[in-house]
Amino acid sequence: MLTLFHAPKSRSTRMIWLLEELGAPCEIKVVDIVRPSGGARDPANPHPHGQVPALVDDGVLITESAAIALYLTDRFREQPMGPAVGDPLRGPYLTWLAYYAGVLEPVIAARWSGKAGEAENAAYEILDGQLKGALERGPWLLGDDFSAADIMFISLLQFARQMLPPHAVYGDWLARAQTRPALARALLKDDA
Image (tube, rainbow, N blue to C red; front, side, top):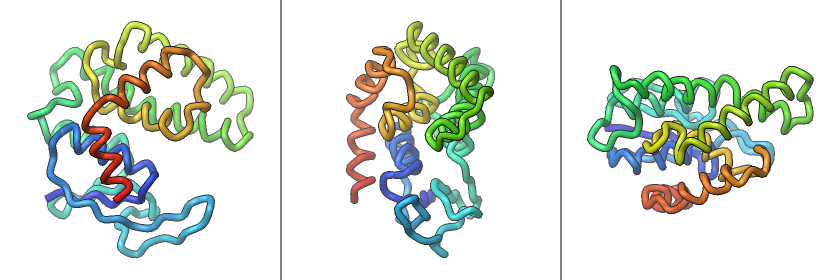
């Protein structure tokens, strides 16, 4: 049995969305996290940094959104949300998951905090070009196939649309995603 450790309106909401897309049964345990507005580390949360998401599957702890997304999309293949090993789209899929965690999050965090230097600003321009280009070929990051990689990036747009330039392609991407029934179910569970 899967258990997702979740804090409402946080990065773990995207994992609820992914679980809904996959049709994966999961228990959701709400935990407290430290937020800019306050809060405290919850001793019931197994994440080593007291953050979310954290996923436990049969006693095995998986943390970090990209790792959880990859784990879940490999484990639940009935409703594919990521290309399988051997699929030509597997490389781009893995690249987008890693790109989110390794490039987008640090660059956006630096810009959000006002600490972006020349390197972060240059990376932001490249990131914008990469993302915009993929979506212009789209409609999803992997072309015609909606995947967990889309969920990762779209979750940023849901939280802070202003973090990416005002290209129509980003607004259209977000609008397409918002029509997905799994997202509506996830948002109901997020607010529960």
